[in-house]
Length: 217
Image (cartoon, rainbow, N blue to C red; front, side, top):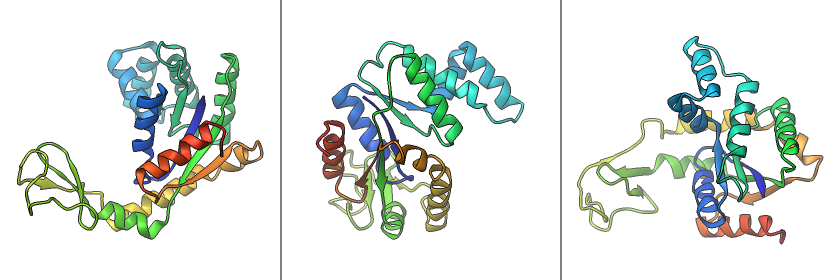
């Protein structure tokens, strides 16, 4: 099972991807993470990417495709792949088709977590974490049981991400729409796109995705 998981920052895409990795043995292929790992490991493709980035240039589609090809060929990808952050253009989508076809595989679904922008702004701007253990909280939906005290480790120190503000969230939403708009029609015409309610509770979102992957939706 190979899928593309789409959703703006804060939609819960990372949570669902982690669950699919754990429960279904899938591999999450995040191009950003893969680039950093390849550069750190000094692989041939990683060295290419490092040279390009050090020159202040964007990593080419060819390098990204080579990275994905390497990962698909590696052990552990037998449970299928979740493509995260790739493809973002029709050219990349066509390259992905070729990569999969060369390996006797295909893309099964493009799953988009749809969100309400105003509700997403509220969700993101209200979140904060324990500075010691990383436990997550929210101003409205999940406050510590004892004020200013982490439920998990008892710390009194909390922090917020500096980019968790309304202006940044709206900018990221606009960027997401701009980046995904080109590929959705490409997959819509092939009947691969499925949408789930990204604003639903985590378990419900997971159930919707499972129904799609199991062919029940």
